[in-house]
Image (tube, rainbow, N blue to C red; front, side):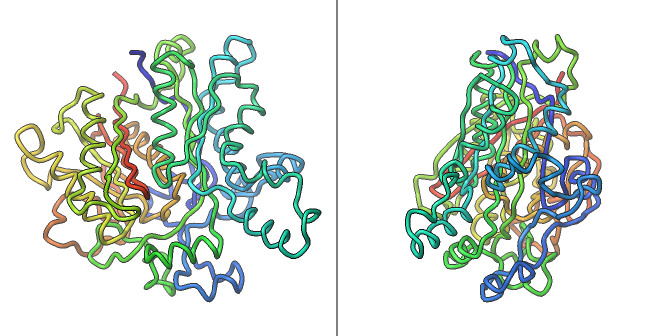
Length: 427
């Protein structure tokens, strides 16, 4: 099996536009969660009035405006999630130094970018327009702006990549599935280079209303947005919706070495499972999460004791965080694991950015990659108190320096779909 490494990173997040700004603010315990009431009156009547919004402004200031990344003609053709994806892909390709022109290289480069919900704005606005004005009120760009696979399509078209062109859409597991699937396309020889990740932008009144009706969202901190996303904390009571994108350039190891590419980390394992239990709730014992992590370690040929850090899916929900915590302790404690829970390093970066849905797994895998590359554990914000079952090192509030040779990044989604990536330092 061919080895797969990570050679480029790109991101647009609530912490900023670009990896450098995002990572710096994450380690400084910054947060990107703000009030949604400024977005209009449609948001003020909703029970949850907080979100992880990408900050607007100049790219030079680490903020987002579409004109810094793409011409107006392309902006009109793309949904916002696709714009985030193409900007992040551009940054990742620049970081990787991969700008192929030879036909063989273009054929060996592919794209896998997914989204959980995609362009809800377009679906809603066009439905209203069609209801009031009929056929002629539907834009000819309606379908292209709606389709989730168009993020990958736009990246392929812009750069002329003729390898696999694929999109995952598996709710909140999308980002990890996209990266994991792309790694296997390389491992099995379908491509030498893949641009992979997830993108999301559905901070819309309808989306917030839907999640709120399902009792999934934080509602108790509308007057203090920065305190609203609190993974593992005793007072956690729902997730905070967020937007953005995370993209990686994955590469076959010998291909990367031949061109002297910078290698951040290696994808060592990829595990998948299903809860086979409930549409939205996890099993209380966390069996699905446990199986995904165990499969990832099996593919990596690693032992639980080898794991230095876990970037948890932990969204700040009562049931989800508890189930994942049980799964992590079940996996890492015991004869082949850690001797005590205090030796388990686990954090949830959703305290800083909220839950980016289909982009969450990709952004968090990017954070895990940098944790390995920089030997630092990113913090869990707003962690004030924990119950007795939560006795691991959750890296509360402040980043910690720690050698990270092997790490796991988790993502779980509605429908009981689970995926884990096992990432390791390149040796």
